[in-house]
Length: 71
Image 1: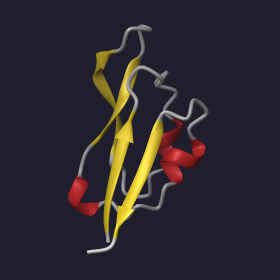
Image 2 (image 1 turned 60 degrees about the horizontal axis):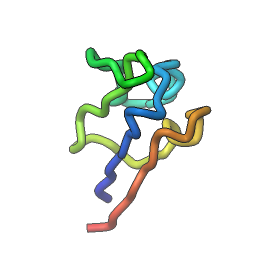
Image 3 (image 1 turned 90 degrees about the vertical axis):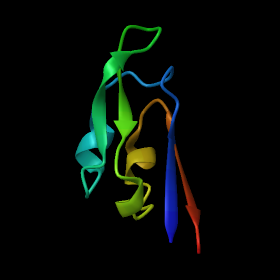
């Protein structure tokens, strides 16, 4: 299964809940700031993501979407 995560950097407030929920530690607080002045999260490690969607489920701002594709 191939998974893809899309992060809406303008909705993200950098709360870090998704970083804690990712079992593989692939979601991290980034170094760039969005228009609201928050450090938004970034997704690293496309090849090892399982698509569990825990990051998207825990996000209070609905800034993360998870897509899964069977290949």
